[in-house]
Image (cartoon, rainbow, N blue to C red; front, side, top):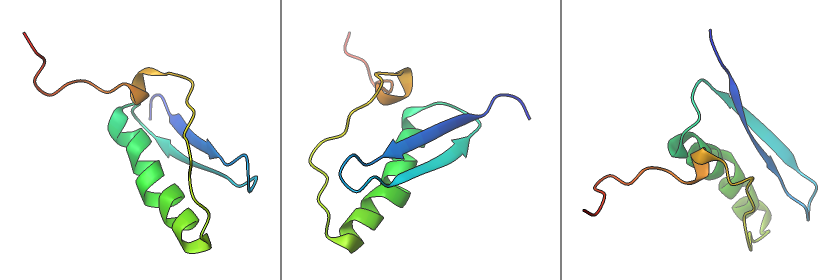
Length: 69
């Protein structure tokens, strides 16, 4: 199977934790867990997300589609 990466979300207010495993570490996988699991749950519960903290990993930086020359 190769390397496996976990995208982990921990809410410091509700103490809810969630994770999803991926075979790659990209901006798309980090956005997938946020849009697919985290935001919908918080919207259903009426709990706003005020900020997101990261470990500043490469998956949170992404790559520009058309870099400026």
